[in-house]
Image (tube, rainbow, N blue to C red):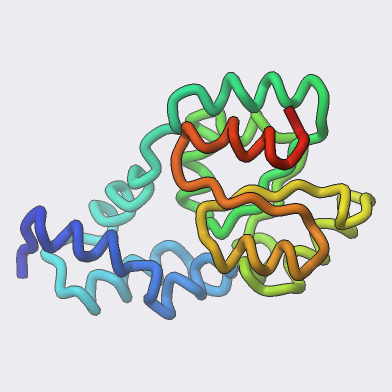
Length: 174
């Protein structure tokens, strides 16, 4: 079955609910296994390689101005990235230079756990060697913000590029 643009928008809106995505982002399922499951579940008229190439490029680019902002912050703060991400999307982030903007990376596919699980926040704080109250966490998912706050971190919901500067000011970072 071939899907049109409307169907692809539906897939993008709902793909995160798939148990296979959970396994992929925990590093428990290979990108190839995910592709096979996704293609089969959605009956896509795509080969595995074609799907994987398209899926990798769902990560397009950082929001405008974010790289500059992170570089300014890096001159005064230690920056860490905690992300629910799979190996393909992280590879794309590396290609785009996103990985270079952070001093440390905590990636769900490497850690075997995902936000908003309490254990992931504890693991990050322990590895960074700082008190949880000294960490300022930003995310675009309310459940992740709640979990970070429950873990003792300062946390700010950021749902648009323009909101980042405001959140930094509220958190006392800038």
